[in-house]
Structure formats: C-alpha cells, structure tokens
Image (cartoon, rainbow, N blue to C red):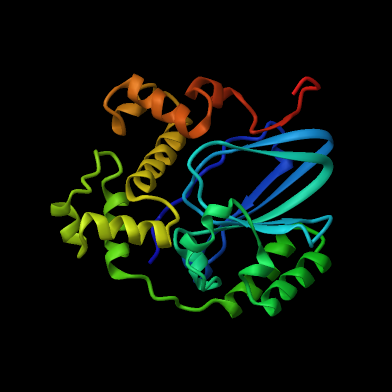
Length: 268
C-alpha cells in the first residue's frame, strides 16, 4: 500500500547541514526518504515533530549507536554533542513491516529501540558495510537502496487497516468519524480499530488522523501567499494554533521562524 505522503520535519538554518532524498520505485513503497544531518561543534538540540513514520537513525561516527524511533505525538528534543553526523531511513506508513516482523505496538512504548533487537543481524551488518564504505550522501543512498530492496519482503497489511489509513488520507480536511457505523465500513468495530491501529501504527486511530492533518497544515503553512491555509484543515485559527502547538510544542509563527537544529543555550 503506497500513499502519496511526504512529511516534513521543519527547516534547518544551514541548508548544507540537512540533506534529503527520496528513493526510486519500487523501494518507495517502503522507504519514504533518506536524510542526513551534520551537526557542527558544540551542544545542539534537534526539534523533531510527529509524522506517523518509523525512522532508523544511524550515528555516522559510531555505528553501534543506531536505533529505531517509532511514531510519537508531541515534539521531541534530541540533545546532540557536535561535531557529529547522522543518517536516517524514514519508512513509509507501515513500510517498516517489510523489514521488521515484530508489530509496532510491541515496541513503540519504549521510545527508541536498538536496531539489532528487531532486525536480522545480516541486514544490520550489510547496512554497516555501506555506511562504513560509502563516503558521500548520494553513494550511501544508492548502496543502501540495493541492500534494503534485496532484504524487503511483501508483508501482508490487514485490509481493514489499509481501508482505515486510506480513509484518513482522503478525508484529511474533515473531522474524522470513527464511530462504530463508520468503522464498520472498514470491516471492524470502533474498539477493534483502536486495537488494530495501536498494534500496527503505534498510535490510536484519532491521533494517527490528527498527525496526518498536522503534517498537511505544516506543509501548507510554507506555501507563499496563503495566509488562511488552516481553514482547509481546521474549524478556525484558534483550533489550528491549539492543535499545532500540541504537536510541535510552539506556535505556527514560532515554528515558521525557527531552525529545528539550534545551539543549546548555556542556561538550558
């Protein structure tokens, strides 16, 4: 199942410090993007926001420091001592199932998990070889695409869950109806849908839909000459600001102006 979903994590002031690249078909069914973050000398923070995706994050200076981040619901601050560099594999929604057989709900509560605890050792070692030998972002992306594509399996997605996620995607600008009546169109009760979503998406159904809406508004916010974009997704501006702050930790105006990678103040 492939949704045309391209989440964002905000801007980094130095364009050279953050690179992204989307894989070519057919790998884009499972991997949404590769990214690389380069942090200069000093103590920094990275301000992450929810996007419903699983990320595999690798410390380019120490491969033992590589871990999986499940979807989350509020802004997350990562403390980073520079100089350092990180490479990330951001999976499509449910795309991680192509490599990880353990259901997301069984490990998402941990916040982050060592990759070796969930992925086969041979895949982890193959990725290590690529990271160790490829000396540029583009070469890493190309080599990793070959490794991942050779290891990916077609995991069966529960058709009821597939119908629900597509419903969310296609009704992103409306108030999602997750009543028993609507859930029956997915082939489940509202209670069964909550259990399915928590087990395979790592979030409750309403939260998953709200993050999709937040991400859509976040992208629209950066479009030029569109000051009332929030009306496409929210009842009014107070509703938009309140929910935006819930997920990002700051107001829309603050987020638009900030760099998500910033130097930590001595007082923090």
